[in-house]
Image 1 (tube, rainbow, N blue to C red):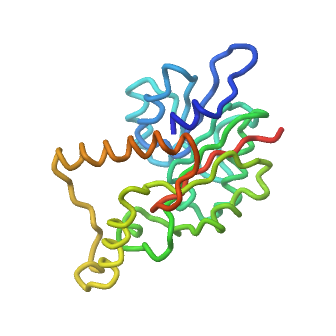
Image 2: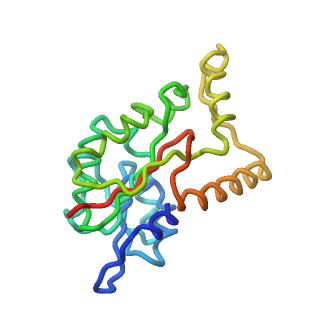
Length: 222
């Protein structure tokens, strides 16, 4: 996300620090990542996450999409919805509410899980309402007053393995019994981080051909 923001954001002409709002920010990882270059603020529905952010001095407020967003319209240069839309009932209206926070030329950066056929108990554990096809995802933004800059798959490198694993979880009785959440050894996580970093550097140059998730950058038309 940082790479895509840096690639596509036009900085304010008055040289002021741009404002970034993360809707559904959790415990604030992206806000910390961006705080050196942006004025950052966030929104979440979980009091424990808000309290964790407050301990680090982050401006994170309680709010919900689409009707209770605690920020002024037209106040942000970047708005982030990182794996948020799949959690809300009204995803089209929520995308519109996020877009309304943008100044002209601002960016909405969004990610969602893809492929309804990959649905497993893990989606239920995370309180997902849906996984998206690409056409359904693109329709979410049709009436939000935005122009697409980039719509791409991601989680590309590991998609064949993830797809096979998810299908097995759906078919096998033991797989249907519970979520697939298991801590991984440190070296395995290090390898996965390396693969993901390589994929990220490729994504800033253009869309990827397939993947387990979708990512987009849209610009506010005015």
